Length: 266
Image (cartoon, rainbow, N blue to C red; front, side, top):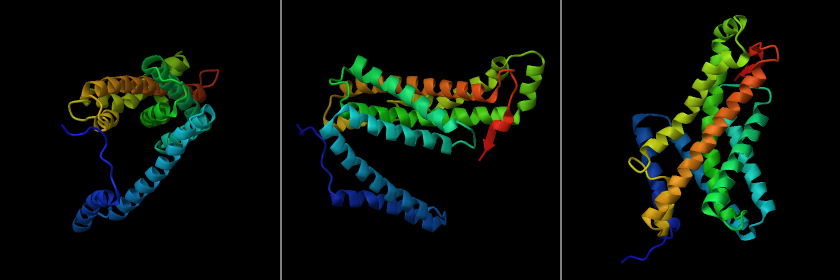
């Protein structure tokens, strides 16, 4: 029976893997797609960024203190909030802070609920569990938040006449914005819902694959993946709803008037 565990990779193996990217670049050159430069830059960034992360996590895991943990989580959340807004075609004053606070609250709540109440990590600040799970939460949440934010701001901006007509007929800000808000939250939930629909059939998620490569029982890996998928669904839905409510609060004043001049097009 083969020995269980991760097979170590060296420079030679990584070089061979890089050859796969060169093949894609060659195809781009042959077909004159013009993406070979972007592909090369992306590959270089992948190597540099992941290498740096590897060294940082080695250091963080050795120290394993709450102060270092929350410093790393703060940097991760700030980067996620910025990435969420960068993908949106519209924004408004205070959106950066709102996205950051939303990611902090929803991310920390779902991550620590999972590590402490479900998995039972001891101590509660064990970075080896908290950081990877928080990373997955932020990666999925920022996508959902970005989609919800862009959809809602676009809808309110391009269909303001409909919203204002409903307001003039006596509708409250919540009643007039509810159809757009509902559609925005649904749009933000599409990626995680699609992932949940095909997980295990079309794809084996990263955490499950990593545990299997490490030598864990496939059934144990499946249990962890189920927990992770539910955690991601919860964090994404909470993030989408929170940012949508924030938009409604910022774009409607106390007299239930729509303030589309607060929307900034990129």
